[in-house]
Structure formats: C-alpha cells, structure tokens
Length: 288
Ligand code: FPP
Ligand code: ZN
Image (cartoon, rainbow, N blue to C red; front, side, top):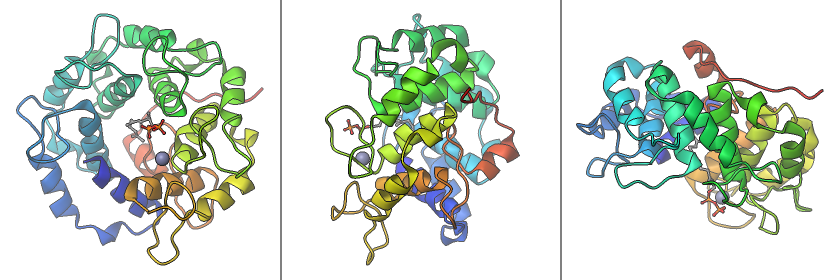
C-alpha cells in the first residue's frame, strides 16, 4: 500500500498521473480494507496504521475519500490510542512516534481529529523530545531524522509545534545532518541517504529554516543517485534504484524548488494542490 502511495505521488509530482489507471488503483485500495475499518498493506495482510494512512493518502490524491465510512475508519484509528497519548500501530501494541503521525494525519483527512485525545497525543510527543532538540521513537529513544519528521508533522497537525519544538535547536540538529557529499544522513556518524532529503528537509521546511542547508550541494547529491538508464533514484550513487528512494528523492527536489516538479507539502507529503483542495490545516513556523 505504501509502495503505491510512493509511486502514485511521485507521478503526480512529475506531472504524469495518467500513467496509472485510477479506477483499478482505487478498487485495489478498497479491497485491502478490513472489517475493523483499517487498511492492510495488501489483500491478505492485517490492518495497520501505516497502511491505513497510505490508503487514505491515495484516496485523497485521487479525490476519492468519500468511498470510506469516515466514522468507521476514525473509530479504528482512535481505538489504537493508549492512556499516555501514544498510538499503537495495530492490535499487537508496538508504540512508535511514526504511529502518532499516521493517526493524527488519518483523522485530519477524515475530519475527525475530535475522535482522539489530541492534548494527550501532544504530551506523548513532548516526552519523546531530547536534549539535542530532536525526537526519538519513544521517550528516551535516540534522535533520528525519520522520527523528527513524524513528530514535527504530527505536532504541526495538532497545532502544537510552537509549544513543543525549540526551532533553533532542532534546526541546528537537522542542518548538521548534511555531510561533505552534499547528502543528508539520519543520525550523527551515519552515511548520507537520499530518503533523508525528505525526512530531514521536510521538517526544516515546516520550521521555516530550509535555507539552513546547502541546497545546490543536496540537489547535486540527489541527481547523482539517479540511474540514467532505468530512470529511478537510489539511496546512494551507484546503488540499486527503488520506488521508495525515487519518491523521496523527487520529494526532496520538489521542496528545494527544482524546475519541472510540482510543489509538495512538507507536513502531508502530498502535492500542494491536493492539500489545498482538501483544505488541510497545519501549523508552520518562520525564522525570526
Ligand atoms: C527512516 O526509517 C524513516 C522513519 C523512521 C520515518 C518513517 C515514517 C513513516 C513510515 C510515516 C509515513 C510517512 C509519510 C511520508 C507519509 P529507516 O528504517 O530507513 O531508518 P534507518 O535509515 O535508520 O535504517
Ligand atoms: Zn533510505
């Protein structure tokens, strides 16, 4: 399900959505919905918040959200919230700030944010904030740019970004993710990887501090990861290409204003045209 979201959104960013058959795509997405209201990653899999969000994002992209029973899906999502405000990914109970983002974003798409305890969700995210300004997967977890994206975006949807985030400290931590290659890594001492051109850069954009990295160097790194025969983008130069790194490479280039790409929204990870059509609200910060 997430693979379909990455591919379909990449094609929209490239201005070529007609390359996929909308009716076939939507029928397949709906065939993955379970009696609980949640969506699975594929027909014979179990429901999970990750795939519920991806399914709703695909439906949003194709203006088809009216196909779901919003109250039923919202009850599934809200039912995964724990007393401490965190969200489990599914019935088996793994807790991760990724699931806080998936839950709040799904409820925002369904216009049912009131179904969850949003102040408790914000309190949990606050507990996942570290001394370096970053966020981890759980309280005490190491700061990680993937988790920084999910926490910043979740707080933005909750309207609590200014309450919880120290934008200068976190902006510094994110800008330190740029390596001499021009690419960004996800944590100190890790290798640069194209997907962090999304996880790290989107958060910097939401914080109003996109200018804090060297954009031409990052652009050159991403373009250097494209396979000029197959067209796709890999994690690092000369590695095998895949749809995940292709989408997040294009998404990073779009945030940088690269010519020929439609603008992407840094909180909702969908084209700005889709976010505007749906009138989705999220808080942004600016640099003083
Ligand atoms: C890095 O993972 C990325 C994350 C931890 C964030 C993932 C976020 C989601 C799945 C939420 C949905 C996202 C969107 C865009 C709608 P990794 O396992 O590759 O980290 P590593 O580089 O440390 O291995
Ligand atoms: Zn990667």
